[in-house]
Image (cartoon, rainbow, N blue to C red; front, side, top):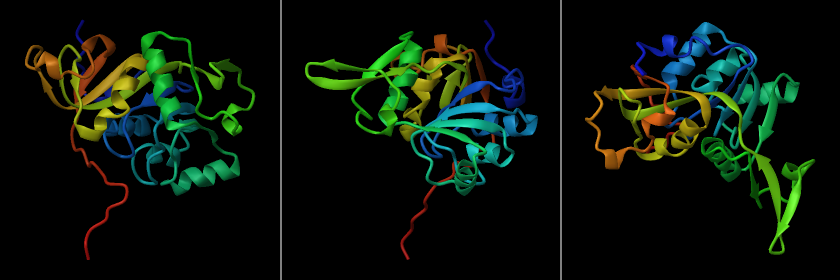
Amino acid sequence: MNKVVNNAETAIQDIHDGATIMLGGFGLCGIPENCIAALVKKGTKNLTCISNNAGVDDFGIGLMLQQHQVKKMISSYVGENAEFERQLLSGELEVELIPQGTLATRCMAAGYGMPAIFTPAGVGTEVADGKETRVFNGKTYLLEYAFDADFAIVKAWKGDTHGNLIYKSTARNFNPLMAMGGKITIAEVEELVPAGELDPNAIHTPGIYVHRIFQGSNYEKRIEQKTITK
């Protein structure tokens, strides 16, 4: 199977209105910048976005929020985006806030083919409202379902033409889990090499999970809160 596509526009061309998308990254680190820009350009609407965060006002998923392309956000941290807050408070945006560990494990469960997990996170809080609970060894757990995402969009440091991926530092946080979880996984990489050039022992995401891959460009790699000495 030829997994290499020319650019982000080609990679995301079949992401349709109303799709559910996992977007990799942690904060603004390791986010699929090129694919997000292509989705903004395409104008795809009514998206459900599963992401660690909602970006900032002028970067990441924040760009999609500005264009009102996102119907629902499923995230664990959203505190850096004023437009997100405005849409939430005005009722324009559905939001599901879940514990970060639960977010990660629901992604992992999707990749492993598990329909659901039991977790103690959120027991006794609003997170547990309306959810099934079970007691194991005297401790209460919530039933949480694996995500059902049409697409996963991830960003890696290096990848090869078979779709094998290597992430760098913090970008390894949510990207590997989300790469496993989408029905169709799209990977953008800083450097694309021929199959066989990557050390098999260094690969974080095996190519079996990746359906499309391309070499991105013009990465800004923003910092959310930049602090320097006076």
